[in-house]
Image (tube, rainbow, N blue to C red; front, top):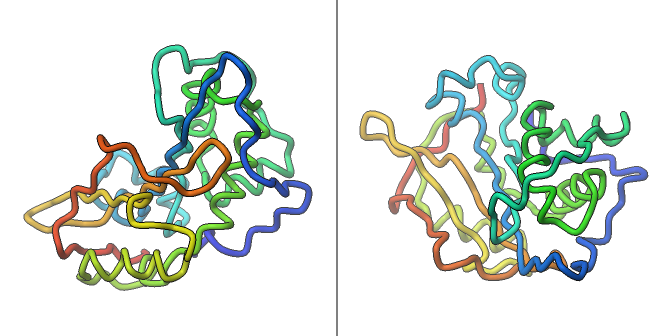
Length: 209
């Protein structure tokens, strides 16, 4: 089942990230999107998590400030209203992971937990994902094809704002993550130079299970 599309935002409509507050300089963000079937296949320790058991094709790991440090940690509450929690769970199904994410980044973002997860939902809803990513079968594809599809479906996205991460097992390379970079206002921007794609020219996309 693909939970990426068809979000009902209802009261969660969000126009983008708020302006950065004084004393909290955020120059950009990186959203990390996980290819769930591949990660569940490659990391057996995750196989009993909800995202694996319920057959998610994609899930969001987090929206990270461009510059992370220990000062980003917070003890503020990450508990969401029930309606919002239900919507967020469609792309971030594991509640303990959501709590841990907020406690690791909340001190560096100019928003509370509810605003932060609203921004993630807004970004996920805006990003159009190629259907090739969530096919039922496992198949090999060229890296250039997947990149072209992302750029075709998202005209405002440019190649420098989009990076791919792969992981190998028994000499087979699987696409495991897509990373998308934004400026402080939520517009696509070039990722930091330190963030580079590591995928070969051809890799496998693990089919849904």
